[in-house]
Image 1: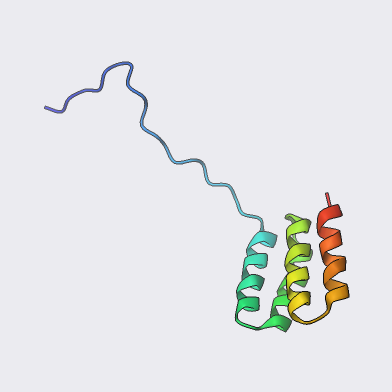
Image 2: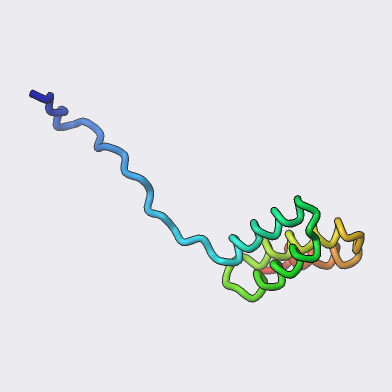
Length: 88
């Protein structure tokens, strides 16, 4: 028969419970994919939607800064980065 583990054996590891990923985080990932494809206007629209969702606003501001930088809007990008580091 199958051997039984000793009484002091470590229990089998169980997977960690899954935590829901905020919609804003998923939208930021989608925007980053669009940005990597050069679809900057679409990426910005997705980030506008992400800003209206629950999630980490700093993450949204960082992503907006990256898109604005690629659009050559450096002043706007800097404002987004400033918001990212000052947002709670």
